[in-house]
Structure formats: structure tokens, C-alpha cells
Amino acid sequence: MSPSFYQGVAKVNPVPYLPTVIGFEIEKLLNLNTLASSFLGESFNFVFGFLLVILALRLLPEFKWVFLLFILSPMSLSIASSYSADAITNSISFLWFSLCLYCSSVKKKRNKLQIQFLLILIAALLSLMKPPYCLLLGIFFYDSTTKFWLTSTIPTHCRSIYFNQFS
Image (cartoon, rainbow, N blue to C red; front, side, top):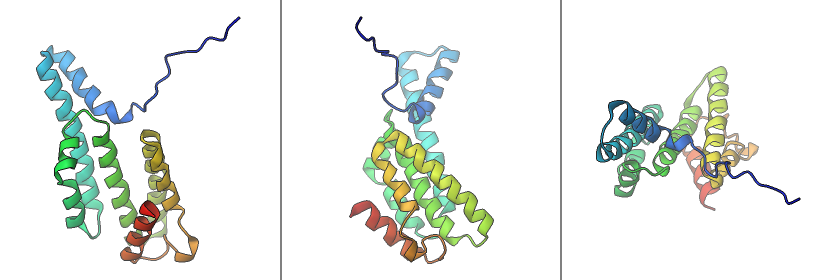
């Protein structure tokens, strides 16, 4: 007897495709043609990513223009207006980094713990979308001698994010 393998297992995470699927479902309800369905899927992907980026920009305590520069780069806009899962992945990544910087400026301990829990959840979600993003969890548990979550100096956090990501 030979072993049988179940072929119905998803090889990619469906979460980044949810906005596109919502656009397709609306297309089915409205009984639109294929071209309209294509535009509707891309539009929902772009709008959802855009809303996540707006939330990320609102949470940033500083460096809003730097983030806006990355968000409005031609490649980022091209990816955002496509079916690619990278559009949602990039938007959630921007949200994660802005939450990191926002957490460093929060004064209340209880609020900081809630934001840290949210950061861990977002990093776990990102690592399910793209496995190399599991390094974001490493940034969260950065060297305790720098007191990553206890100080409120944002440039220190930016350096730690930069050196963990690119070294």
C-alpha cells in the first residue's frame, strides 16, 4: 500500500489576498464583466493597502516625510495597485515599523504592553506571509542592554531596526 498525499493544502497564506477576494465577490454580486472584475480586484487591493498606510502615517510620532517618501516611490505605488500579495505585505510592514516608533513614544506602561502585544501579532502575521519577516520578531526582542522598550529616544530605535534588518 503506497502512502497518499492530500493535495488540497494551501502553499501560500491567503491573508494578503483578502481585499482582492472581496472585490471579486462584489463583482459576482453585481454580475460585472471580466475587465470590471479585474479593475475592482486591483482597486480593493490598493484601497485596503492605502488605508493601512494612512493608519501607519497617523501613528508615527516623527519621520512622517521619510515614510511618505518610501510609500510614494514609483515601485511601491506600482506594487500597491496590482494583484500582488506584496501590496498588503508592504502596507502591513509600514504599519509594523510605525507601531514600533509609536511604542517608543508612549508613556503609559499599560498602553505600551498592548502595543507590544499587537507588534508581536503583526510580526507573526507578516512571517506567515513571507517567512524572512520572522526577523521582525528578533527586532522586538532586541538586546536588553539597550533597553529598547524602556527608553523614549526614537533615533536609538531607528538604529536598532536598521542594524538588525540589514547587517
